[in-house]
Image 1: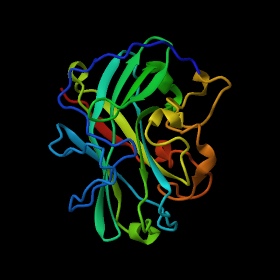
Image 2: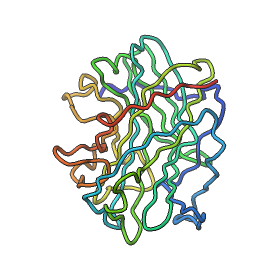
Image 3: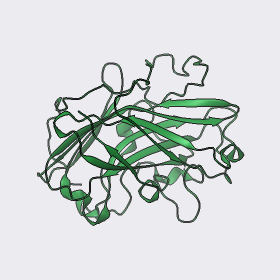
Image 4: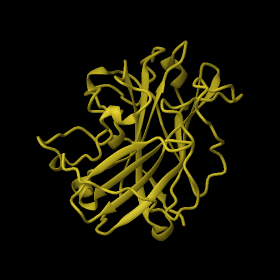
Length: 269
């Protein structure tokens, strides 16, 4: 992988911070019961500035057992992007209804920088109160309809597991987020996401960097060339199993994120 020594600074003049997160991704039922990890700081993810939502269907034919991991991955494209761009993904959380209750999973925030240099870098930092993804990549990585990584959260499925029958019909899973940008407000970004199921994740939690998350689709930025999609947890692909937004057929390490529907979002200032 072409990795540069990059200095990560506070480069966003944004309109809101990132949602708080535990390393494993916390779920909160609608009644706001105590978090499974009492050490995590969970804050209200409501009141987002320029909020957007994107919904997908889970595979209703596959049950997801307790103890397995749902890995939610967001990717993006900016069609025709040939100049620098910086924006955030903030107030990021996922909601769905199952087991007769509403689940709410806090996700890390993300800070994305597209630049003209050939260097590529993706890193998760725990921060003082919440986790955040940093992505710095060349804007040429989105040529040929490729996507770049944007956000990821892993959530361990609690007892009694998730029944595929809970996701029949119109019952969808929804990712909520805001996209502040400041200087680059008004830029249209194509957002897609998926959820893949893993029987286990080695050396996780507490550090997302242990997953080996892939930064971009473009195989030219990896040696040897790697055709796995952006967001693939390269160190844990052997644990992929059925379920989530994987609808069958060829396995996809991100739950078909790059193939799922596109949500057009606009960055705000």
